[in-house]
Image 1 (cartoon, rainbow, N blue to C red):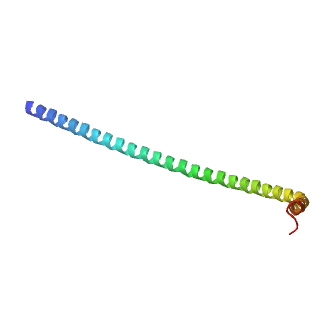
Image 2 (cartoon, rainbow, N blue to C red):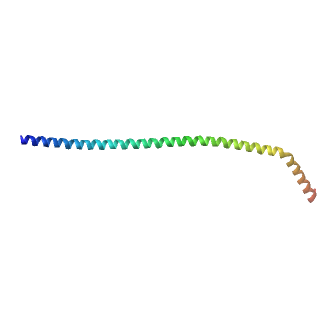
Image 3 (cartoon, rainbow, N blue to C red):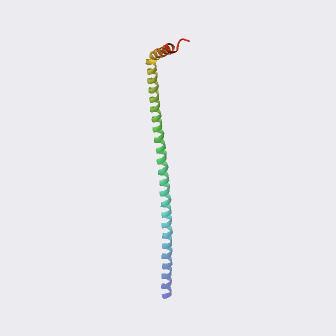
Length: 108
């Protein structure tokens, strides 16, 4: 009976050791799985953030381009209006300069 009891104790110890070993292996597997999932989620989040950044940047660039075009168009219109309003004065000034040069240096 003592042998039988000793065998049962050894068997129980062996089973307990195996259970501990299995539990450690399962814990290691779960930890590894959790780390992999966390890394994957971090990667996905970074990719999502980068896509959002790129989309926002593109939107801002388009808005800036539209504003720049509007500013350039306004500037061109303003320059043309200035030119048109001073065209007569340019001709008058050119004629005056020509007269001054002719008066000072002669007519040829």
